Length: 123
Length: 405
Image (tube, rainbow over the protein chains, first blue to last red):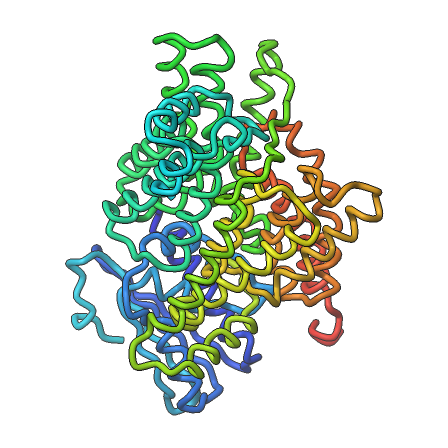
């Protein structure tokens, strides 16, 4: 899949999730390298710990699901009228961190090949 | 099933009939149990094993989606799929995976469900030209080409109904089948459909589903170690609350135990319906039940299935059709492809799409010349696309969520 299309789908789904909370502010930042990319999303609504845990679980599945990621992952970013489904994103990325920042939620997505090391990325 | 097949049919006779099944026309509706019950059971098990081999070699999980695929393959092994006509399509999908530099695991679901178009292989190899080396090669070659095309089509079709039709590959295969049937018709080579439908009582076929259902429920309560019966039941209740929209792997979202209980109860519920209306327990009917059971781990629950089934049953009665006729009984079982509509939008929506589904499913088989075994998936895809298109328009045009003018 082309990188542009892939990133567009992930950003579409994750921004769909953020917009469900009707924030007054949403910031999406993208940083690309040859072998990977980092997407960071902020808004101005803080979530409680149970919701943060739910988001972390959806974005960090316990096992790889190639049979679901490749085929059903195509739906990511395409169904904005309905509730966003973060697991569609989680199957397709390498790692995600989810925390409350000073203003609201901060979601970091790292994606790329096996050689890609997310530790080399900073905001 | 292999043991039951050989015991009930006799070894030599079953082997002979099994070979016959490989060359038999497989377009809708070809009930293999009409030819030989034992051979149909052996064929069904071997087609299911093809699915297990894919899961093993593609190193993916045996979970909700893969169990749905394997049990669907097993079910259709009773009326259309054979190892001979299924393997070329699976290999075609594998070639597409290699071409796209993906693993077979990434396309494994498409490879398994893509066998819905397997009848074209048998049709070209044996049915149309009478059989021969070059027609067998032609059938296999066309199967490979179809398998190669499927991943491209399946992804696009998924977006049209947004995951509300569980048999999306059936929808995709029906779409592709339209073009194949059109080509055959233009060449004057598309033969009329016929229905081969076994109405003879056979104890193995009659008892297969309730036996399987009870086994699933027992396994459901035993499979999760250190989990109490109450937790398994809580997990089952949780599954009933899920809409079931693709992709809903109930094992992942609830638990293996709760999922098996859900599958077992769906088995008993669908069998009870068929038994009450005195439907014949033949290959297609059992195939429908096995498919429901399989999707009991991947989108179907008692709660989201019944409104759609009720809608189809109401339509059958309104239009004065027999509940036990081939079309209506298969529609009543396979209409559960639309269960996520009821799960997401409620009982009325489920009744409505179930009603529409019956009217569509009796039309669509002719469109693709019976080449798409998952005809209900094709009709369900059309129904879901219509419904979702309207819902999407409605949801995206709600004035109260617009900016103030």
